[in-house]
Amino acid sequence: MKGFNEMLKHFKSDLETLHNQLKEKTVEVSIDELVSVTANGLQEIHDVKIHSKAFSENLREDLEKAIVKACNQVMAEARKMVKDKLGKLTEEIDLKNLEGLF
Image (cartoon, rainbow, N blue to C red; front, side, top):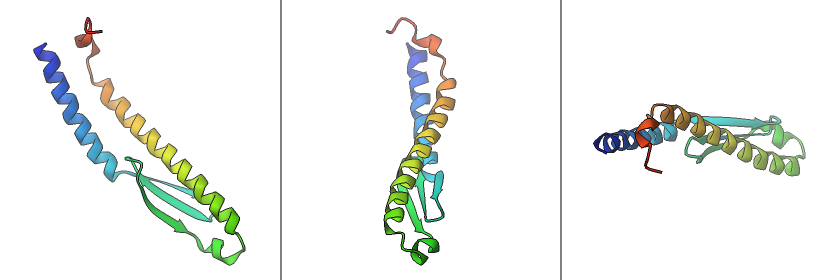
C-alpha cells in the first residue's frame, strides 16, 4: 500500500503541473474571416477578435452565428488538448499496483 500512496502523491503532483500548463496553453479558432476566439486548456475564453470583414458588410446575423460556432469549436479544441495531456499523464501510471482494489 505504501507504493500506492507514493504513486498517488506523484500523480497529484503531475496533475497540478498539468493544470498550470493547461492554464498557459491556448488554442484558437477562426470562422469565415469574421471572428477568432482563443481559449486556454482550462476552457476559459481569453480573446475574441472581430475581423474588419465583419464591419465592412452587413453581416450581423452571420457574425453572431460565427461567434457561437467559434466558441463551440475552440472549447472542443481545448477539451481535446486536455484529453491528450491527461492521456500522456495516465500512460505513466503503473496500473498493476491497483490490482485487487476494485
